[in-house]
Image 1 (spheres, rainbow, N blue to C red):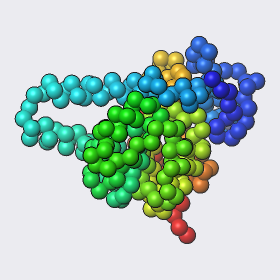
Image 2: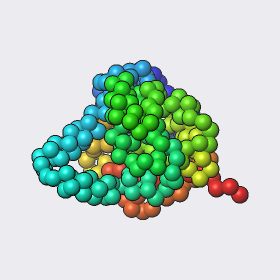
Image 3: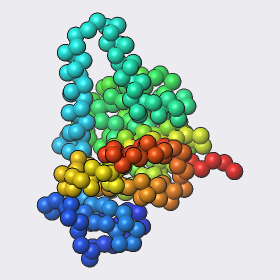
Image 4: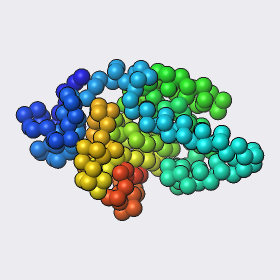
Length: 271
Ligand SMILES: [Zn+2]
């Protein structure tokens, strides 16, 4: 366990009162200086390397349900392919990838078993970053056939392995809320993106109606997996503070009735 300053502005809130949402020994603080909400005492990166990595549990469950539904359907190969295509087309992440990424190398931060990368069209060269040893091994197995690369390490370090200004796109789908150093991660992303490259972010929305209604029972609270709790305002501020530009953040991308929000960011356009 470590104790950290506000990841947005660097203020110490150690003397401040923890929010009522804090759970057991895990202290949630709202920065007195900038209002950013964060876990003050997150686990260290080393604790995330084993497959007990709690942040994966949700995704694994999702995948199991999907696989089971595929098996159950028992339909012909054609029907399955058709269904897969429909699922892909309606997938909000794939939709954004198609819209914002040009052909070239794409990094998925926190790629898990590499499912998303494996599903991308061949015009994308896929690179996964995954801290869990077991997930990274599975992702490697999965992606080797298409020449994919997987770095088993913390995300900032992984992005450091990528050549500067080389990436067509970066996916951080349900990742930034887990990152102990979110600002440094965004800086590393800005460095790795091509001038025309884009980054897709999806994070839980702490300002959602559901959080206000459900309180501590809100599905966005994960202790100690989620260490940053963004609102539309604090997410935009952090992105802009590192010199990135918000490319897409429509009302429907941050609608308060959803538990999550989507944002597409870019390096600032050349002047
Ligand atoms: Zn702050």
